[in-house]
Image 1 (cartoon, rainbow, N blue to C red):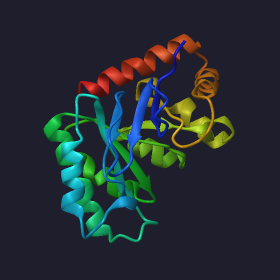
Image 2: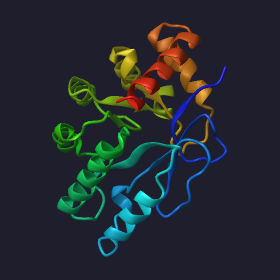
Image 3: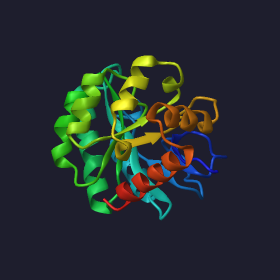
Length: 208
């Protein structure tokens, strides 16, 4: 059985969404393209957006990762402007948005009303209340390696609807199958059911 890796940084993984780093050339497999808060160049923002638009091809699955990060030195207003522009691009080309968020979840939630396409928080690893608030605002949550050992995160997974879940390796070096096995145990369903549901979720976000 093949397992879809929702967000990864490894070009050799074909069954998943490769996160394209700034100024890279897209692979021949599904990828996401965006300007990460950490990569915003305030002196070359227009060039960065030009690169982004020029690199959007039929293999582009999503816009991102993009979002807001309280630990990044770039001014918050600039981060918000760059984030909103990417939401608008996603609206225009009808692609979902993969979001990077650090300590700015309620600000990100406030941008949801601007988005016409599905929004997915990647690498979710926060408190249950934040998860509930995101889910009540129709966000999807993508979970990574921390689920294998973080009990509170396992509890969040247990209470997250199956049709709102994705699984990812991000930049961690482990086999995505381990994560699928763990989540199938937490949700008390078969590996086949979990795999099928995540593929359905992919179909849902791809079609808006």
